[in-house]
Image (cartoon, rainbow, N blue to C red; front, side):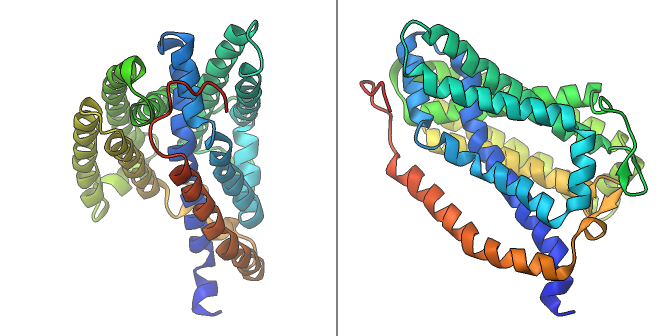
Length: 337
């Protein structure tokens, strides 16, 4: 094997992890805006908040497709186990995202039923976020695997820990959504978002702290990875960096520096993601199936990698271009898209 072929499983694991992370930080803020809908005051505020995400929200979900598709193509064994173990929350998430998309489109086409679609947009955003958090918690708990197949029950994922991660993700997405609204709007809507963002930050850091205390006790391997050398270095460094990112968010959102607040919120997610990576690497199904055990032959991975090398920069480029074109504050007088 060549040097590249030797590390193909790790390369692909990094690409999929990158896609999932980008999805979380991009689609996270527009899901957060949806969760904030009932707390934005009047209809004009809700319309302005929705207009601020209209140009980018559906493009953000490209990364979810890429992450799921990459997992199926390169790690089919892991895909099968994870899908079977987390079938219920995954289906709920997809249905909620679809329902949310319908509400997004229909809200701008009606006056009589607008309150109904407002509730649908909020409900779809909240349920999708809760389901994503439950998926995270269920995966970290480690699905039951016998041989090469999932051997647990359909509701094994539903525990106090997955409920906690679901609530944590809601708080985190609201934190990102509030920063986005501060970045894109002004006046009363800005003030509301700023106050909510401060509370969401406190809740997010609190949930991260609780999850950090609980995760090492889910599995002895987690405890070993966090508190043995050299993992203890990252375990000590991440909380310090998280507090720094939290302080940066707090200061920025109070000073109308929405971009800095949003980037600080992203930093909180990236640091949390790094902690998850420390916990499970080199496993793709925690403590059951490693990246190399789940991977397809090197020839298949290399063939797909060629496509990824071509299309990943294109996706990054048009995503960045879309955000650049629609930069700046959303106009108070723009009520349609």
